[in-house]
Image (cartoon, rainbow, N blue to C red):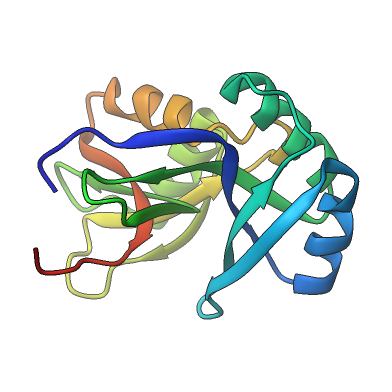
Length: 165
């Protein structure tokens, strides 16, 4: 994926546990469609709405407010071919050195992240999620993590579909 990702104000990547609860929470925002993109390890849906603010930042705040306690939302993006690139709500962080469990817990607490699991093939890589759903801005959490001296790389875990062109 070499091009710029496009964000539409009305499309969101929504993740949670209960599909029916997510759909119900989004109905007041004019739910046009929802498509389940993954069920394992977590439910991730591509959602299109027509009743939220046309400005992407304001729309995201609105959607997150409606999902409070039920799930989380991130902007859905599309690559240069129109294929979806959907954040799952998980952040992958690769450290310069393999951190101890105590170091991971301390890092997560300081960064506002909850440790999910280590990568079994790359122990210096760990999956996190925002600890506070009310302040679950993945791009901000990733930017903050990248500033830490112990972090080699940080990125959002995404679901995407690639097509041969």
